[in-house]
Image (cartoon, rainbow, N blue to C red):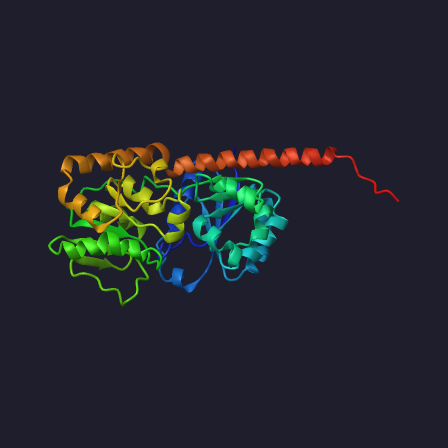
Amino acid sequence: MNLNIVVVGLSVTSSWGNGHATTYRALIEALARRGHRITFLERDVAWYREHRDLTKPSSWTVELYQSPNDVPRRFGKLIRDADLVMIGSYVPDGIAISEWITSQARGITAFYDIDTPVTLAKLDHGLDYLSAAMIPRFDLYLSFAGGPVPEMIEQRYGSPMARVLYCSADTETYAPRRAQAKWALGYLGTYSEDRQPVLDQLLLSPARTLPSVQFAVAGAQYPSDIAWPDNVMRIEHLPPKQHPAFYAEQRFTLNATRADMRALGFSPSVRLFEAAACGTPVISDRWPGIETIFEPSREILLASSPRDVIEILRDMPEERRRTIAENARRRVLADHTADHRALQLESYYGEATARRRKSTRLSAGRPIQVAEL
């Protein structure tokens, strides 16, 4: 099965200020290795243009467009003829583009929600990239949140088929590196107002308590008025190729979760898988369903307070630290690689195709109802 796939996404060319790019790259590379033809359509916007960190891919295609009108004008035939068309969350003018895609594409259409907890929290109040009325028009809703969430999307919003498709780690890029540890604890992630309290509690507060211990925070868009302790190194932005080296220089790395993700649960971030794939032990805040991703105390460490983090940093034996890291990496390799996600997507495509064929047969066999006069 070699599919012609079109993806319309926020960004694949720049990882600046978003986690979408590495998620898309990992999945698309895995699909391309399996023989599928992929074209990625991305709105050409200044902030990503100025921070591009993807060279031209060799096995798939990126096309940039200037406005939503370019999509039907330049890519109409491509989209109509594709076996699978996916549009992702946070695409500019996503509702208008989705309306056109779902009315024109002959293949399977899917909404790829890389921000499911945020989407569901705000959907009834209005979003630029998705409306509740659009959900039933897609053959498939790919959710970044698992557990009970896909079933809820079907029941509450009328999706004909909602399935979990977590992010993953590109294990060719994200792998252990040899390095001397510089920092006891680090964090990699774009600033988010609703995630900052977790970072304050589980990294900045321990840093203030342990002034002789070194910490690091890497990521874009942090406000200038944050009072960083002197022992916290700030790194503005790291392209993905530098992520493994950054993780290798940390004894532990922090996973800090956005408020909507914590509330909904079952929503692992891409950084969680990438850090574990690099062999760096993860300290995470707590949220429902995390035990379905990594086994607490064996594959991941959970913290609820600064004291929890301080005890881990001060007291954990080195042998146990390494064992937890190795266990987590083994779990990623067993369950959470990009190749696993590519196989899942193929399975969902087959399921959606069979469902459409069945629906078509039932419609064709239904007797015509003649109204009584």
